[in-house]
View (cartoon, rainbow, N blue to C red):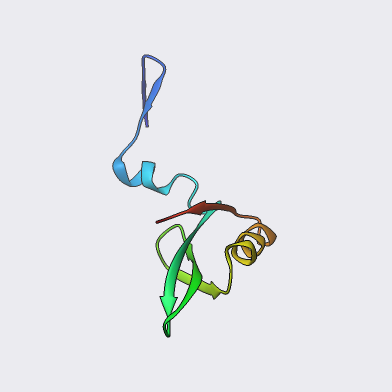
Length: 71
């Protein structure tokens, strides 16, 4: 990384990796015709499907991650 005028220059790959281990995305999806909430790792891998947004938020936080909504 190169510092110039107080800013850190980093590659797009390095920028994309920021926080990857700290966040999970939750988004509404349909499974078998039912609305559910999918939980995804920051890299897009689906890791769980739960019945409600509240449950998704609890699962994410119980695993030490910060939930972000994806639409």
